[in-house]
Image (cartoon, rainbow, N blue to C red):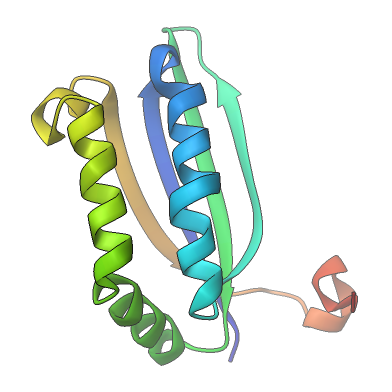
Length: 122
């Protein structure tokens, strides 16, 4: 059964451009390398100088998600790139000042995949 992961961030507007660049140049390539399928990533501004950024990922199963995440966490080149970004941004503690909330959950579709745009082949 296909599952979807929704990953959400609430961040200060000051970090949006840098975080989006980090996602596109560091996080996304490694996820794709190990088989993650990005459905899309979006953002919306709130009225409190914060932006919500969220992504939807598609996996064949929860086990598939776990395998991919294990591969990403064990990719030492990737881990080093992420740690370098943390250092460049002032460290994890400094980033906690601009990353207000990070959460994820898993979703199941309520319609057959063939009735969605996700069934289209490239």
